[in-house]
Amino acid sequence: MESKHFSHVHGLLFHQTAQGSEIHCAGCRSPGSGNIYACWKCNYFLHEDCFRASRSLTHPAHPHHPLTLVSYPTYPSTQFFCNSCNLVGSGFCYCCSECDFDVHIHCAHMAAPPHLSHSASVPLPNLTNNQSSPFPSYVPSS
Ligand SMILES: [Zn+2]
Ligand SMILES: [Zn+2]
Ligand SMILES: [Zn+2]
Ligand SMILES: [Zn+2]
View: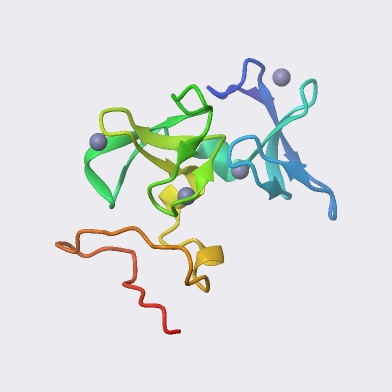
């Protein structure tokens, strides 16, 4: 049975990829396997998690406005600057159009991206610590 997703004109089919085969998720722009949703006509794939991501959420780093999930950034460059991991992103992002606050879909759901945890060269976002934050305070020991 096909399921509609706001990011794609065609219905997507649930699919379990065979072991060893990888797809490229159009949502988070990462490789994926296992449970996915696919449009075979277009070779358009989404992780099940990306498919099911809610259209709006509140991020602890930006508690004042709800963030909206968009399938492409609202900027002409089609790239955005993630306010959580400080990397440029494309694909799905959660954004606050009022404040130009953008985060990757995976940064919105993950407190600390694992690929950053051992990299001291990447500055972590400055969070106001006035409430319990899911982000651990991280001091790189050189
Ligand atoms: Zn994905
Ligand atoms: Zn399609
Ligand atoms: Zn990010
Ligand atoms: Zn905002």
